[in-house]
Amino acid sequence: MRKPKLPPGTPDDIEAAFYDALQHADIDRLMACWADEDDIVCVHPGGPRLLGHEAIRATFEAMFANGSVMATPEKLHRHDDGHCAVHSVVERVAVLGDDGPRHAFVLATNVYIKTAQGWRLIAHHASPGTRTEPAEASAQKPLLH
Image (cartoon, rainbow, N blue to C red; front, side, top):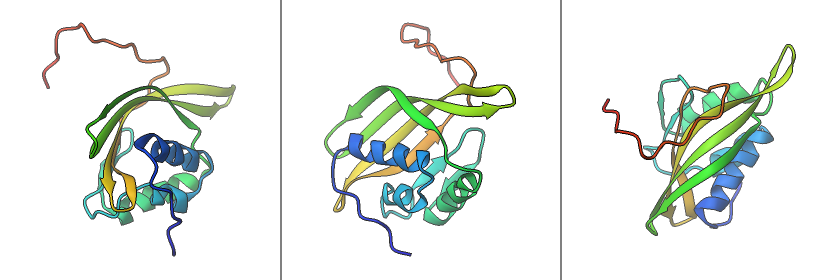
């Protein structure tokens, strides 16, 4: 199967393509957002660490078997040093329940590197979702793990 080509673009462009692919259940376009590196990593909310293209593709294919994922990134916080970009986002995920659509909120971190093909995703890590939008807290005492 041939991976569709994405333009080199910026980390923001690749992030937009990633979430658009989720919303359209387009596995080939979603996988085109990932770097060709062997050590790419993905952690879905509450799930195990997935390493490599095969494992990551399999989980997204399983998700897409139930339809698209209506996740929209909001409240983007960026760090970009020219070769690596880290995006922290709040994903607003539409979930269809018995009483109609609801929203869940997931904190996610997306890491991009600049490759020969342009910016590509090397890591996506998402927290378990909550029903309420997470509060921003920058002045709190640090919590050690």
